[in-house]
Image 1 (cartoon, rainbow, N blue to C red):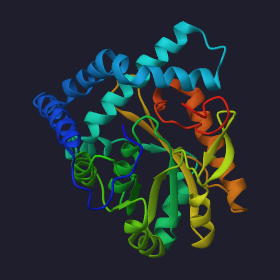
Image 2 (image 1 turned 90 degrees about the vertical axis):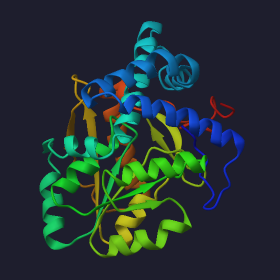
Image 3 (image 1 turned 30 degrees about the vertical axis):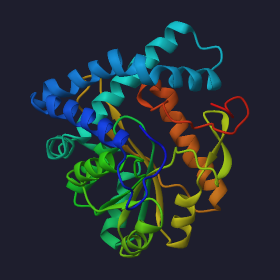
Length: 301
């Protein structure tokens, strides 16, 4: 998990090569297993090895920032759940077509689904906004299987080798994809104007965004999704794929479109939607991000 975007033509360093070789070996080993064994196995590896080594500290910091009175036992449970969901999501994405084929069979529910069907029929663009919750590529694959044209906006990784593999695998799930930044902007705008559905994640820290509450704490948040919806007269629709208790399937839910008003009001509604999902399933959100950077208690985290 890296937050800094990769340069378009970045030259891999020795560290990049070593990290990528180690990750590639783990993925290769995991892919030797049948899918139904592979996903829980990587979840186990993530919660028992990667979690204690690299994840749990940040998860605890974020949890205590938002919920300072949370019992220690609950913090430990959430740490394990976050690491487990991260590991499962990671290997699902690197399972490409296998994951896509399974996600394509999942039912899609929610009060906003009819609005998506109508937009598709009329060729009206849609901005789909989710979060690092459950597995966000499950709904992208599910909507694509329904016949919708769903493009994805993604944040390039700082390791160019890892980024190359990541993009290759998620392209196997659904296309097209647009890198965040100037490189992908023109293609993304053309896609929206043509009546496509653009999927993005709205829970990143954004230094040049607006300070808007997320889980009851102010967080720097991009208002670009709302601005795109207003500029191109697109629907702005929150949606999520929540991992089911079996650990392998998901409940895909489409919420009602956010009414058009102004970017700040619309983005507040998106943050409120994501916050409600996180509160309902605390272990399914990636508490690994520096979401509340430069906001008081976590300014130096």
